Image 1 (tube, rainbow over the protein chains, first blue to last red):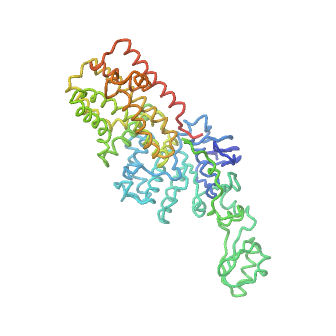
Image 2 (cartoon, rainbow over the protein chains, first blue to last red; image 1 turned 45 degrees about the vertical axis):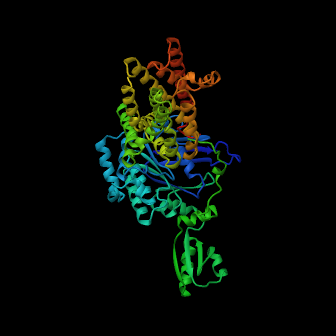
Image 3 (cartoon, chains in turn orange, purple; image 1 turned 90 degrees about the vertical axis):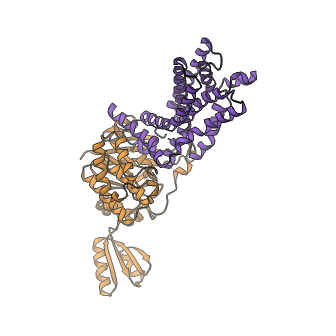
Length: 319
Length: 248
């Protein structure tokens, strides 16, 4: 399968950065065509910086990014003709209606009216925005505004779409509606690059994932490949009081409220389950989640913010 | 992008930033009318009508100047608060189309002001083929350099509040202090020299000369056109060189 995006040795140091801490440090990635590619990492890990470079909004300090065969930086016009992006913290124009946000964006991209209307209808329906179509953005909740922006980009004719934390602030039902729209777009052989720090979202949507930490790619692969690469691919949760020394030999023990969590191998997980059942302990077991993988690889929860290189960013305008 | 796509994009941006906001807030249409009408009223009352015509020509100039400089607030707000510029950058829309569309959309707000002052221009008997031709040329150049200035400044603003600080300053330097609403000769000699640093002095001299409010020789007209054209070209060059579509 040809690659939609090939990034090679991308480094980004923001101009004026006092510490010269790179936001991206020699990052290489290959995003295959079609499907959803998830970029996961803590806030400040470099996900948005990468998206902004690939979406031609930000210059890289060094390295190369090719989107659909075109070099970002020297062939921006060719790249821009085939991409769309929902930036992090973007908001739709407050004086437009929901329908106008989608329709006018498509018209601005140069689509004819009939095509823009058709795509707008589909997108509003898919993201359950039909009842809000005539409502001004200024009267929408934050979640509906975010959904409107997703509808706008997913309705476009772009081959590569960048969604930077598209579901932040959405309720669980709205999140799943966005997920469904993302899946539909990916079924149309379009490539979607999604950043998120919701690991369930990354796992539910992404055909491949890259874990970024401090501007570097730490892990990359399909969700099952990522699981295979961690030392303990299974998790057994035991409820009740068990002396830690009895569990230590099975793998990595993490005490939790009311019990213990053991990260372990497949054979050891079976043995531990049998051992626990013989003692009448309640338990649950299964493969580790992305959250667990993240914790193991990075050593911190994804909820913790990374030290931001942007703290050193200059105060002058950059756009 | 084909020419048809470009035109479609341009029209959509004008609609988006020029026409649709008026639907939700019709007072936008009065906004650009308020300052020039205030000046006209004040000048006419204080001068017992003697400076009415200066107020009319100055009003036309100030309306076009405001249509250009007003762009800085919208551009800054769209870039920083809404991230609209980032959305547009990552799309087939080209930077000149976005800027032209935004600039044209600002003109929509100046239509009532222009209409009022054009009517007054005609009622005062100032409209001749020559004066209207010169007026049109000058207004286009003033709008052009004000737009280029606004786009350049908007590049450096981090917050829309900064534009609130700059707008009155720009207005002061380009429309209140220079002899836009009064004859250059009213200023002392040293101030006349200082006034020559403002491009609107040359614009006003051309319009005032064209309608017979001030003497205008061929040679001074040539100088005025030359300076106005050069300033506009220079500000466009600065905008093209300094304004950033993609962040460094």
